[in-house]
Amino acid sequence: MFYKVCLETGDYGLGTGVVRWRCENGEVWSFLSYFSIVFTEKFYKAFFILLIMAENNTLVPVDDYLTAGVHIGTKYKNAYSEKFVHRSRSDGLKIIDTEMTDNKLKVLIKVLSRYEPNDFVIMGRRENAKKALALFSKLIGCDVFTGRYLPGKLTNAGLETFKQYKLVIVCDPLTDKNILNEAFEQGAFTVGFCDTNNITTKLDLVVPINNKGKKSLGLALHLLAKYYMVNRGIIKESEFKYTVEDFAGE
Image 1 (cartoon, helix red, strand yellow):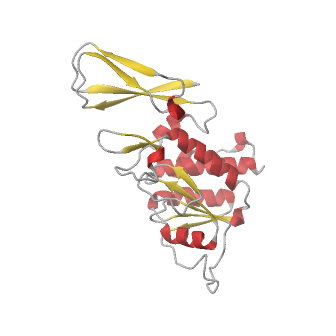
Image 2 (cartoon, one colour):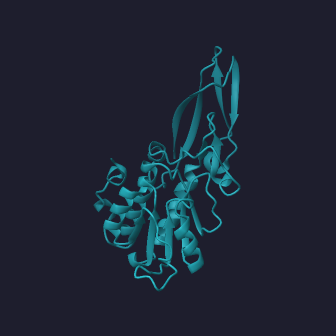
């Protein structure tokens, strides 16, 4: 295990003395009891020191999650998301617990690896998902839907495009609500990449993540493609040559 120290500026009005920040989240902070910051003079622009414990068995180093902005939520949270919101920043943005993101990605990888590519589909209507989904489909051979979703694809047997899937993944339960509703009605296993403002009632598996960012979704789909191919015996882990930039670059 190792610790990564990140510095963020903020107007906290901290004065002379000792400030003790008690680490209360057992999942993230583990055996830390508290961390002391000693100020020798008054600061109106203070550094807020955030210690994040990164375990060796994470899919990628925690720094990779932070660089991709996986942890940056919206200014809103609800009863569905509060369990994976670590804290709120001074500007109101909610910070997603990256340990929970990592854990749920691992679950998704294990679940998805049980299915043939023809058995699942990923929907991403937002522009930020299109490049990553195109490459994911090319590598895995599964269906992906981008842009506007035409109702009935999963439920209307009279349509030429009709097809039923065993598992449906949505990149945003709000913008991709039409296919999510149909998948729920059909009885498919449903998965959602969920930000802090999303409602998760029709999802069997929630992956907490910044689903508005191109890099954060790109990283998630990069990991999903890589370990799906590894788990299915298509490649060895060292043979996966694609980078996050291939999924999320301009």
